[in-house]
Length: 129
Image (tube, helix red, strand yellow):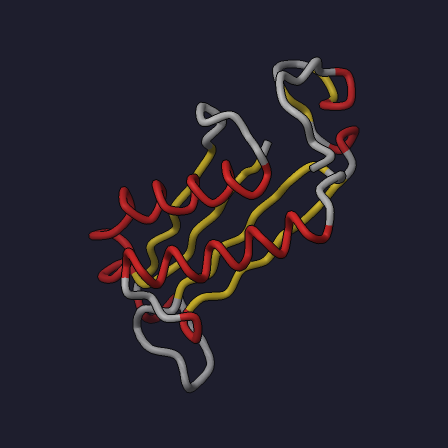
């Protein structure tokens, strides 16, 4: 499982939400071998006064936060980051300088899903990739 949060300026993020969601999901499926139906994305389009960022970034500046269970290898996480930079740039025009990606990993027992701690779930996919 991966829970994705995407932050950006509302005027830039709103028009590309559907496309960006598809691109992000393709990267997660390819890098983490998740089933295609495991898609959990939340968008946070913000007005300029609520989204403050450093000089050197454009109005396309976008933050992607990815919460996952522990277990993915460093190679899988690096592949995900690489795919995100490549595919997002190619499909949305958001340049790598305007994209920040953070992966947050927690033990399964810190997640509650479908009424139980995630370490008690029977998953239909591998986490250790």
